[in-house]
Image (cartoon, rainbow, N blue to C red; front, side, top):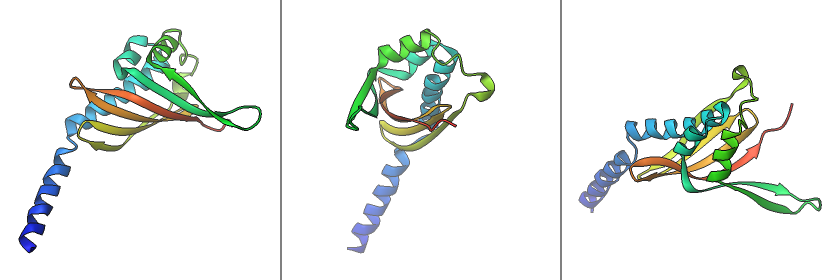
Length: 144
């Protein structure tokens, strides 16, 4: 029985060490920064490089009666918004772009990006060998 536990522990350590590599961590952070900085720069190509074509970005909003509903944007909306210069109005010295990798397991990752006006919780997938943002759930930060 002890031998089985030791073998299980070795297998578990091997699996968890294969779940995250420094190269994956760097690529995930680069993907998040392509998204964040692409927005601030008004660079639609950089934004597009970060996104899976079937991306869904959602926020929970409330209607006039206080009922929750989901507002959804897709990859095309985000790329076009960047190309229109959506984030360029934020002065460089006020651009917040804090990226934290919350978890990586094989071809899936969870990432948090804190920007000047909101926080994004991203799910990324390693798709055709590249990390891409597949889902984003986000919230506005309180205005000062």
